[in-house]
Figure 1 (cartoon, rainbow, N blue to C red):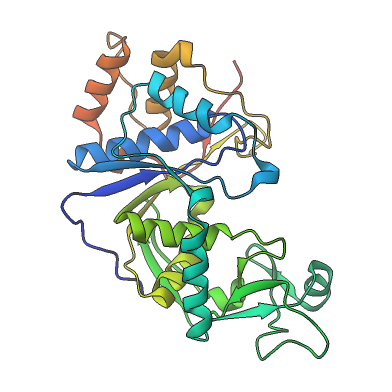
Figure 2 (cartoon, rainbow, N blue to C red; figure 1 turned 180 degrees about the vertical axis):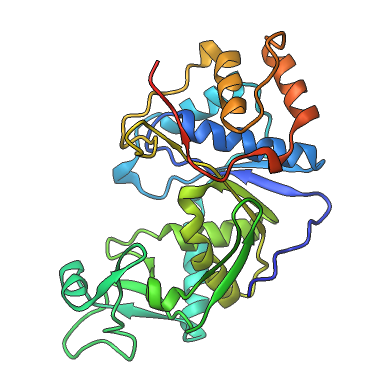
Length: 303
């Protein structure tokens, strides 16, 4: 079972967008919820750009996201952290895991895994082909975490207790990809620990990743934050609003209207006479209660 870090002084949360596109309604809703949770706790709100996957990134998206957040009245603490500038830290963490025999090289291709593995929580469960050593004549392509057997448990602030046998549902998962890029799971755990993040508020699309991150936190000997997973926004077909489903970008020139929509989707509809951006933020800070937020997906209808 995970032992969430007690709220230190100050509470320290974060928002960590990926610059694979412009800020859209789903990511804005997450930003608003994490910001309000931090500020109403008298805590800090950090901003981190998860720019670890250059082939998927949109040129200029990082700067555009920052401009949009500023236009909507967000104020973050400290400098923006860019994961692309922290590759040495991720390598050091991986080297530590290798030295502790908690990580190992893997020579398997995706096709080999698909043929040998079984369906799991997030694709095919890695069958453990290279766990005991590389097959003769093969060279390691990626690095995997040696996941222990047994249940990992977390109590989410909206979804309640969650248990998962990560080894059975996912298998030994990748920490460094065959193309040399570090995996999200490693980077996010290393950065949350380094930045002293003790409260993670993010979208429910990452709920299934939480137990994987807790397993990695335990392997690295770092504290486990508290977790709250906010509802994802979906279209009428039930598809998550995302860059992949062509979710429209947030309009900085309509900041107050965008903030009002985000608050409403989080179960906090502002009164009609609360019109300006400053008024909306003041109202939200005075009325925010995470218990009023739905755990279920929120349907966003066109028009």
